[in-house]
Image (cartoon, rainbow, N blue to C red):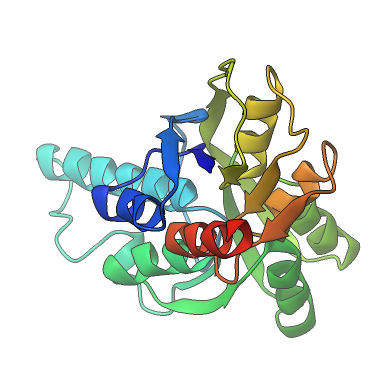
Length: 236
């Protein structure tokens, strides 16, 4: 049995596949480029639907604080910055995104499995709040569409771009592991999923896979380890 991962894996993650008696090929189907952007003056409610958006935001905050520290005309930024402001609330998608926010001291008011569920929660519970949605250039439409339909005020800020690393594979795989809709788009540019099981990290990724095959399964949790576990169980 041969497995292809569309994301490079750690040694321990690869061993989960090899230990099950399968071979594994890995590559990065996408690449990320962080963008320069302006932080809004007022930040109260932040929305992140990916770890990349959180990392781009953190990079900007650190750069901003460094610039303030180097400008002698301005007061010291110690204890300032959006992450220090009391009452700042974050709303996110996925356990990895939540973990990165918590690791950096942010208050996570709500974490959901997918963007649609998060948008529904916001629409039901925060009709009068204003949000900043930090996202990539290939973000899905569900969240902003639901917020607009429910007249939720929000500002969308593009903080990173996703590029596709299209690569042709001559060999066939019994399973391909997908971790994002962009990863699916990248792989299917030069390959097909005929007679191959697509293993998806979540429903949003599965929605993209359904454009190419009906042979797919979804992991129990939005982690790489859960995707691997689902693949191993399905192939056995």
